[in-house]
Length: 336
Image (cartoon, helix red, strand yellow):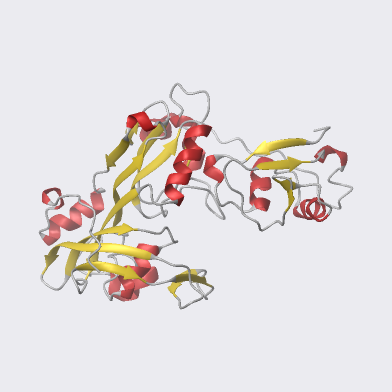
C-alpha cells in the first residue's frame, strides 16, 4: 500500500473493537505499530482521532495510512507470516448448505447447529465464519454475519448477502426492529409462569474465566419476556423467551436468576442445571426457535423463519412427555 486510503466498515463488523478490525483486515500490522499510528492521528474514523479499544459501526470510513512505509523489522516486530488458507471440505459445505431455512438475493437464514461457534477465537478453529464461502451460492461475495448465537445455542441465524443488506439488518438488530423467540427446557418451573425479567447484567472475571452476572447500577440494561408453555410437575418446564435486549448469555443468566436454570447450563446453574435420569442433559437446552425481521427491501415486508428443535431437545422432550410441536410459537407478551 503506497498511499492513504479509506475502507468502509461492513455490516457484520458492528461493535468490533478497532484493533480487532485491523487484525481482521491487516494481520501483518502489529499492535505496537497500530498504537503509534493512532497516537499520531494517522489512523482516523470518519475523520476523528480514535483509540484501539473504540468500537466501529457499519458505514464508518477508516483512514488507512501507507502501512508499507514502515517495515515490521523497523517497528521491532517479527516479520509477518503468511496466513493459513482454510479449505472447506465438500462434506462440510454440503452439511452447512443443508441447514439453509430461507434464501433470496439479500437475505440468508440458516439453522445453526449446537456446538458450532459463530466466529473463531482462542482454540476455536472450526466456526461458521470459516464456512461462509460455502454459502455464497451464485453471489459474488460471501454472506455477512449480522447477529450471533452462543456456540452451544442452536437455531435461527440470519446472514446478509450484500453490504447494503448487512447495514440495514444490523441496524434492525441493534434497534427494536427484530423479534426473537427462544425456547428452553428449564430445571424447575419459573414462578410466576410468565412476565418480564428486568435485571441488569455485567461481565466479571472469575477463576474459570469470564462470566456474566446480575449487577446493580453498574450493569447494562437487560430485559427478557417469558412464558411457561408446558410443565412436568414441578420438575421441568418448556419455556418461551423473547429478549428485548441482546446481552451476552442474557437468557441463561435470567433463567438462573429465577432459580430455574436452563437444562445443561452448568456454567450458570451449577449442579442444579442437570437431571441425572435424562441422557441428553449434558447439552444446553436453549434454541433460537423463530426470527421475524424486516426485509432490507421494504417492498418485501418481513422475513419470518422457524428452526426445528435439535435432536437432543427433541429426545429430552419425548422423555419428559412434552410435545413441542403442539405448542404455538408465539412471542411472550409483556405481562408486567
